Image (cartoon, rainbow, N blue to C red; front, side):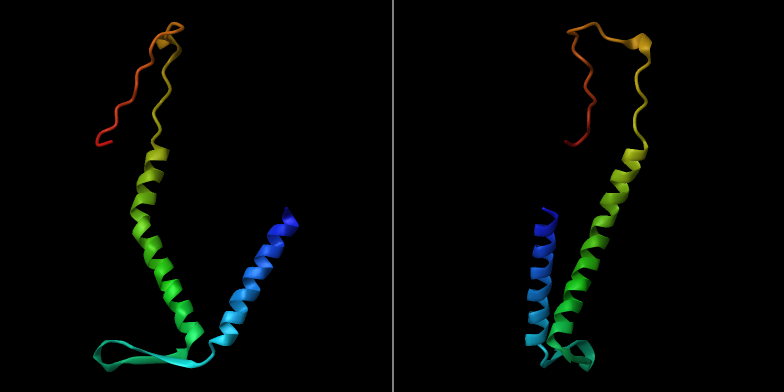
Length: 98
C-alpha cells in the first residue's frame, strides 16, 4: 500500500510537471486602473490556486475557532451520586437551533 501511494504521488507530480512545461508561454493579467501582470501561464494558474486556498482557509477560520473553543469547554462528568438505574432513560443535552 505504501508503494502504491508513492507511485500515485509520483504520477500526479509528473502530470503537473508536464502541464507546467506545456504552458510556458507568457500571459497577461489586466487588473484595475491600468495595471497588468505578465508571467508564464503556469505561474498565473498557480497564483490563482494559492490565492483561492488562502481565501478559503480565512473564510473557515471563524468556524474553526468556534469549534476549538467548544472542544476546550467540555461539560464536566456527572458525579457518582447521580447514577441512573439500569434501563433508565438518560437525560439528553439540548442544542439550540439544530
